[in-house]
Length: 289
Image 1: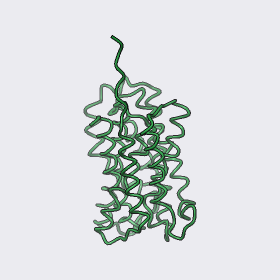
Image 2 (image 1 turned 45 degrees about the vertical axis):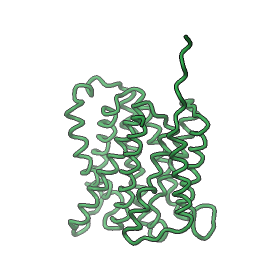
Image 3 (image 1 turned 180 degrees about the vertical axis):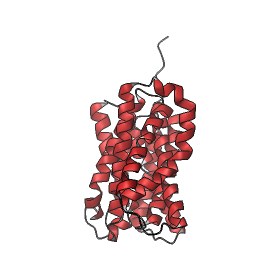
Image 4 (image 1 turned 135 degrees about the vertical axis):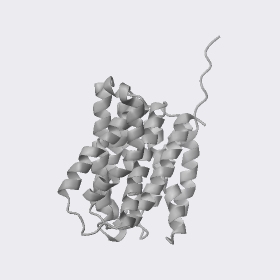
């Protein structure tokens, strides 16, 4: 298995768990406070990276550093918008896979601006993954798009832009160095929301556990994506493949008593086919004798 593919699969699992925890958190915290407190979950990842890469941080590329920091800030803003969509209630509160539409932005930017090229199976995989993502989000009453997408357009665009910035950063930085700057950008954003947002009278132990777990799995998924980019993975492949996290979240939600309809099962099947296509690498060309 290619290293970039292994790291992408880590992101799929991590974000699948993040989606489940997002659903469990509900409306216990405001969107801004959810972002602020979930930053505590970054500590187990960020501190070891700081220790390992302190010397490299001082001589890191300025361009890559700015891109990684910008990607982190954009992700934070996307998170707040996403949690706000969940807190609106109704269907928006039950569809945690809306963020999986973000590859529409990342893939478009990568193909146009980075001139990335895919083999035929990977092109088919990208198309199939977008179909699968739509199946996970299409409303059951037969409309083109879920009404919840109206509220989720902002996080979709922000997450897609963040994925593109992550790829740009790893063109200039080692994956772990990029992760330090990227995750480090969460800290000032957390301080801003933590000081400006109203706190509930009581934050229960369950809420603390959920929100810290939320931050940890979100951070782990983003670190894994940066590692996949740094190991030569294409943004036009990694972005849709990593956003197939409903493959993880839906079975877990079934165990928690959620129901899954026929279209979700069809989405799972299409997503599996998409994963095969996206992971299929062309054999390296033989050099002439």
